[in-house]
Amino acid sequence: MRFYVSGGPENTQRVAEINEALAHNGHIITAPSVMAGTGYDALLEAAYKKVFSVTDADFVLLLLPGSYETHVELGLALASRNNKRIVLWSETGNEYADGAAACAFYHHTAVERRSGSFEELLEMLLTL
Image (tube, rainbow, N blue to C red; front, top):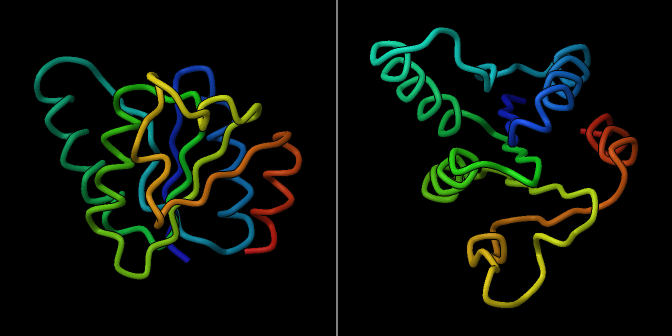
């Protein structure tokens, strides 16, 4: 399975752990979700790589809370969802609450919303 994992800055270590665990189980990382370098050229290259990486993945996992980039990645995953599994994960589930601050795309029928401990998430991922 080809996979893409991303999350906000506070989840950088968790993203790395998931990438390592899935790759160890024989899955293919479409691209690391971290950007190398700074400046216009680095941003341009990162943008192209991230678009390709998200659209090329069979499985997209986004760890919440995310950043504005996480929401763009969710949009890309939804727009290219042919046979793609899209999972959002939150430790608390607070991000899924209804109300003025709710993100409508978290509630799209193509999106699986999960919450729980990081250990539970890893256990679920190891069954893929």
